[in-house]
Image 1 (cartoon, rainbow, N blue to C red):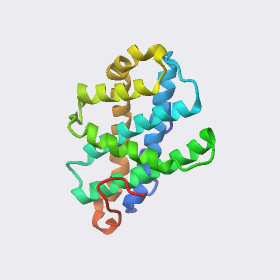
Image 2: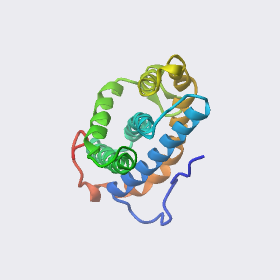
Image 3: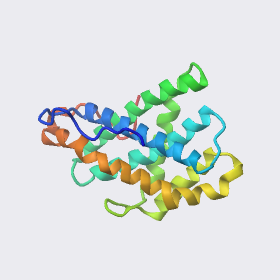
Length: 202
């Protein structure tokens, strides 16, 4: 099981949106990596490190949408955008480092952020219940994207696996840790209104 950050050692300290975004991005990366491992443990085949990062990208894009839905009722729109932007940019940095290790030197940030932005539109009309989880349509979209990154060998089974098992588990793992990470930022959030942008801008 991936080790996740569930809160802060100093619970009285106010954290900036960038701090919180960094913590959330760490957990999203860990949860996504665990999701990939479980996919492989189920017998679904990945062949290269690059392909594994493609799967992690799709899981991360899904999870960041779930973060946005979690924030909807408790954060003002501009602060929600700022926190999602911070999370996305931190994730892009993690992906950049990992892509360089697997694919060699290059700028991989732009393509990762492009995927995140594309998924914003695709997932925008999909429903999420904080208790019940993502809708079937949401999970089906995720399953189709994961299937597209995998080989043809198991393609007809992957979407079903994501709908029935993986998508909800990712949701549960993320929503378990979010409250403890968000609380310090919620207390004095106006002090940390520094990031802007509807999408993930470099």
